[in-house]
Image (tube, rainbow, N blue to C red; front, side):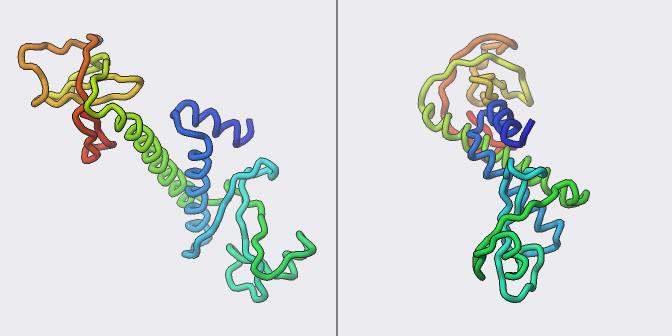
Length: 192
């Protein structure tokens, strides 16, 4: 399975547009590459199915090579592209398997955070439309006095202060609630 097929599968599972997921993955790869090479400069890493590793780094063609991780000499560049000029950027395959443990761990952390951010943005956009409206959900569980509802594959919180004291809120019970606000101060973002 190539990298784009894997991205499509993850995008479907997480309900994130594949282009957004691709951008997030490329940014995470860029951070890992910088960590692996020990550089501070910005670097562009792209996913590319045409190369075996599935990833390329864009290196700037320069007259005097100062930073091999982000630059390539004009002499070497012309071996790959005969009309290369100083200031051009050329793609070079990178083997992400050589990144090492720390860079790989950095990549996983950055990607996980970017996926959470993308899911939260999508969720926020979805629930922004529902502010002040009634939605239907199923009670999933109680947590620290709050009722957690399942609404369209997403969990939302019904805080204790918003509950009817005489209702027992049993699991798997269907109920309708009014979406009052989006509270991003809670762990992972919350919807109330």
